[in-house]
Amino acid sequence: MKGKTTKKGGKGRASGGIKKDGNRKNKGHGVKPKDPDDDEYLSDIEAEYLDDIPEFIAKKVHKMVNENDQESIKIAIVNDSDFLSQDKLVSDTLNEIDGFMPESSIPSSTIEIGQLSERIFKIPEAETESIRKMRAVFSEIGVYMSKYTSGGLPKAFKFLPRMSNWEEFLELTHPENWTPNAMYEATRILASNMTDSTVEKFYSKVLCPTVRKDIRGSRKLNYHLYMALKKAMYKPTAWFKGIMVPLVEEVSFA
Image: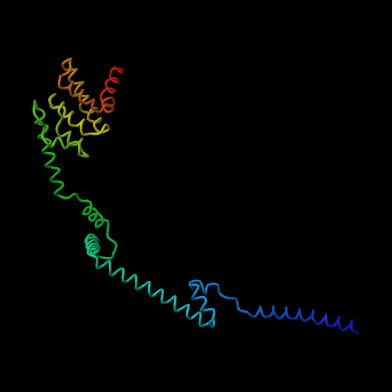
């Protein structure tokens, strides 16, 4: 009898254990899964406090916090725009831009766009006037250098190496009409103040053709042109590329 009682008791415990596990499983099915997005924007402290209050209240609190953050962002944006509008530099820049833009919100025609581009990229009259004066000055310098014998060159010619469009102004002086003395002085100034790549253009387009012309015409080289060639060696790389190589090529193909 005792053995049977023990056996029944064992069955009772086993069945009881199975029943408890079943209750746990059934209880798990009744639990609503937690939304992983509920605590996405909450800090650790906020999440800890919200775990202690009912779920529907926690969602309301979470919603209120998000709405408050969005409102704060809108206020900050408005304050920033007010601050920029009060800035004198920004306001002046905006006013200048408004002056270039058409008042109508309707898309502008091709003619209006063309007029706007002309207005933006138009060369100022003062700059145009200064260029005209410079051209007149270098034209007069050309006349002076065609009669030059001694003395210093005009100051405007000494600024020629600093100009980006120096070739244009140099052509206005008509180098083919310079005297040998003027060619020497010009070579001395340009060789001392220009880079090798820049002065090489002067050597190949002005100095070398002048030397060839003088040798062909008089069967000898003028002393001042010889001194100009000697002074041109101050930039040896430009001298070989602009003078020596062209002369050798001419003799080779002759």
